[in-house]
Length: 339
Image (cartoon, rainbow, N blue to C red):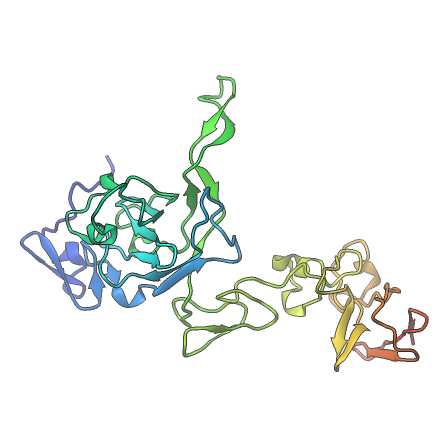
């Protein structure tokens, strides 16, 4: 039989993380400074001061109610030895219930009551069975597991408290049946908004400032620069790699798709807008054989120049990075000459 816990009480200092993290006194862990929790598992200096939805996954929880997308750490107490996160404007709250984190609303979580819900939640007498309402619940967080020790709702999978139609079979021999399935998976994820070079770094060579805010590089965006600018119609050589699907195809004539913000193969150069720069590192297997092996591939086919190119007589020169090609865009004729 696998080990399981009937109590979070302690028998010796080892149960409290050793003397460094806590001491066992009268079957209860007394945590050293910098640690918290029933077994002194959690490092308090790693507790995130604010969380929000990760823009890489979703901008809403997609629940039946419009839930807040950002939450701040509640300083007045904890629930089940875990931090509480609150959005003061909508009074939405994220709290731990003993096995899962939930997202709910302070005005509804305990049902009709005259007491202050947050005071009841942080009370040592609070029990999760008193919860009457929630919108979203997380995956299970098993005591002393890696996700438990992290002591945060960041990075967990979430599920919406709603039914959805689906099919399932009780066994391989049984026919599939259609029924309401509960719960419905959400694509949302939470992240910690304050960057840290060690514990919560900025992505893609972004720089974490002293104020805990990322300064992004290479066109990446998001709270932690975690959203790469791929598939946006602009070739970005930093992301022109296989693990980014070669910048989402942006660097190749046959795979690039123009967007509202960017026209494929055209960019502002030296303050001059709409300069044809070509497709420097094409990865399309059908045409890559026309390029040097592992080298740049210049496919300067005639693009459709926008109407904004209306200044008569202007030429837009472009010299390839290897110095072998000179392309000149002529506005009057909407053509590109390769010299």
